[in-house]
Image 1 (tube, rainbow, N blue to C red):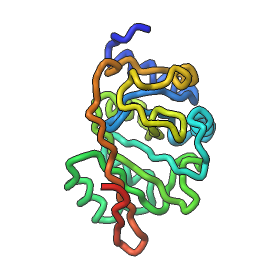
Image 2 (tube, rainbow, N blue to C red):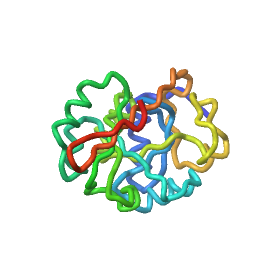
Image 3 (tube, one colour):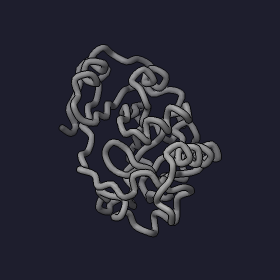
Image 4 (cartoon, rainbow, N blue to C red):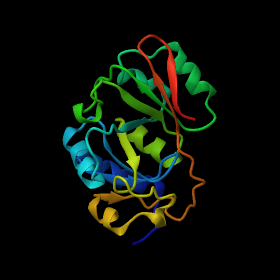
Length: 193
């Protein structure tokens, strides 16, 4: 496999696959992830199948800018903007009342985890695709999360529709995102620091 690829070509190839409801393997601001169009139920179903994950376990979505959050939740409270601005590491916020997303990406309680992605590739991909992406770590559910591309199982690589070439040789200082859940009463709860 040729691991050297122009960034724009890689993004264009990924977009073509996403438009067809495919699942891609790509770098994010935390670890390598499985991603698909967060508005396409069939694509989300395919991702769940590849991941071998229970649909009871929620997925998160990635957006390229905090302004996009408003398109996918009923309300963005002021505290959410403050948390995003103050965060010095990747931050996933779980919002109540998701909207405009595939039903199978929304949790049973109607919530959705959203992270503004800061990875160069992923951010450009979302910007050019103009849709949020589902993101989950690049492993079979229950297995160890790979910290770098070379730790991703061949079995998983064979199941996705496109493997991004950009950053395959990079080594991450893997850092999971902080997770904060917003409550309907205006308070929040830290689930992971």
